[in-house]
Image (cartoon, rainbow, N blue to C red; front, top):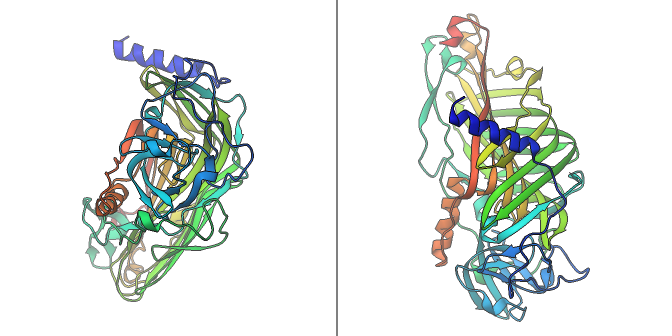
Amino acid sequence: MRPSAIRRSRATAALLALTLLVPAACDSAEPGRTPPDAPSGGDQRYGAAPGPAEGVTYQPEVVFVGGGSGSVRGVSDDALTWRIDPDASGADQLARGRVMFLTGRAVGRVLDVRPDGGDLAVILGPVDITEVIRDGTFGGERPVSLDSPTRYDAGTPFWAEYDGESGGGGAAVPVTGAAARTETGTHPVTVTTAALPGAGTARSARPADARRDGPPAGVAAAGRRQVAGFAVTPICCADGVGARFSHDGGGIRIAGTVTLLMKSPSARFHLEIRGGAVRRAELRIDGMAGLRIEIAGATNAGRNINKRIPIPLDFSVPIGEILGVPFAVTANQLIGVQTAFSAKDGNIKAAGEWSLGGSLGFGYADGAFGVTKPWELTVRNSITDSIFGPSVGVSGIIVHYQAAFRVGLGAFGFTAGLYSTVTATAGLTVGSALGAPIELCRSTQLGLFLEYGVGYRIPAGLAKAINAFLDLVNAGPIEEKAGIGRVDNVFNKLDVQPDAKICRG
């Protein structure tokens, strides 16, 4: 057996042997690095405070601010600026480059700090979990139910919109097959499939304008919300995670629902950090059941749309303090819609469902990843069979959906810790109705991707938009990723109907 194969075999054995342990003790906390006593009871709308405990060592640059959520006076809609009590213990030690740890949600790298009125305005960026914790072993002997999460709403942050219409990037890929068929032959329709970095208008408040009044983070705002010109209703978690979305403007109408179906979802995790490095890690999300996509789009002006929308809302389940660290399981989502109408009367509609089984997650040990793949897809309702779109031209639409499950510290996509993300992309096309006497070609390109690891990941275009704002307020930039991770393409299939030469191209 080759050495590389032997290493993989050993890593696999280690991953199989990895169990979810009751937190074990390691080095005791350094003097001066112990969190203040967590407030008893009190308002936890901004997250739970860390508490003192043996068995965990923090990094030297971590600054513990006392008072928990009681020291928070507001947070900006972009979730970057936290207004805190300047008289809270430890607040006077905050400075650029240090790490603030106030609560499980108010934790991050200090990019800027300044007095404002009677408050202290602190701009926080994401931070890797190993930049907070140097030594510790964390886990739980029981799964954490995700049936009844707390909803944290960020309001209307500027970063909730970044699209492909205001910025370049990505390779132009011709859609072939059914997308390229008309009564006269092949006519490629060009769409851009890469993540697109265009930044939306920076509507976020400066540090001095962080929200002080109105509904705080954590107050449920049920029903639809407007994000980047879309009406969006996020769904979570007992029966799955997903979103209903619609758009009507500029001669384009879009309506759809994407759901990652789940049954009694739960999470398990294990994390061991030694010397500021991850030694072992495991995250498993149980209850995967299926994937459902429903989409309809039309134009009466021959126009197209390309949007990526990170939904600024967390569904979070607190795990409780483990060695004094207030971990939580958080689910957040991103949707994207891209149309490719080649005629003024573009029109397309489809719905489909696939079954999934098993768990979503990964294990990491001895420098190697292993992954739990639930992607034994079985078609329940064929989305290709359902494609409908009477038009004189070719019509296409791409639906992009991402669900991220994270266990760690932080808020609104900036959570650092263990993560497992599933991304589904469905590209649907229907040929011209003028070619129907010969063949009406329809096709579906379905892709499923897993991204997993320990640290954090922010889409490149989103990080670019945030950094453009941070530059305006003279704050330090954020990095789009940190830690260890991997991406796997676990499913990619093209379905063309009918199975005829004219449709396959």
